[in-house]
Image (cartoon, rainbow, N blue to C red; front, side):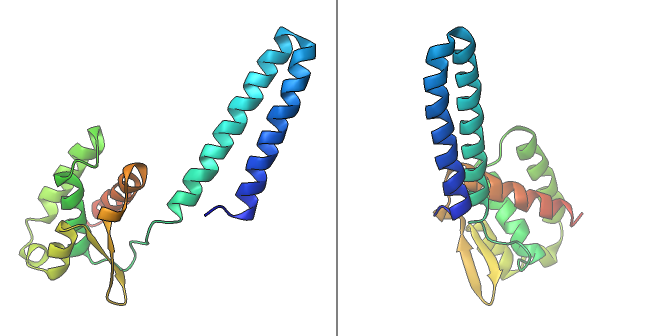
Length: 150
């Protein structure tokens, strides 16, 4: 869902691109370069606003237990959500945290391994509902939180 500020920014960017197009035609090559720059800037701003909105859709990790965060990290590793250096770091952190019996014997850990994040008040958030960049962003948040436990 788009908020009023984001919607206004997208409309303004579209309006600027349309006005720039008319100017670009009368200014020749220099105008076309300006149009290209304005369009690129407007597109970048719209993407940033979109990612900001998507990030607001992610649950907070503040109510999740250490065991649940560790289980979620295991879910992220097992499902290849993290790539490259993040994947390597996640495997290392996971190895360190799972050496503690108190973590792996917890119901929060089991829930996390199944992709269920504890969000407080006996509520769970399923990572299965997330796709692409959102799932990756949440797994990166979980990795950062898990690293703070070491």
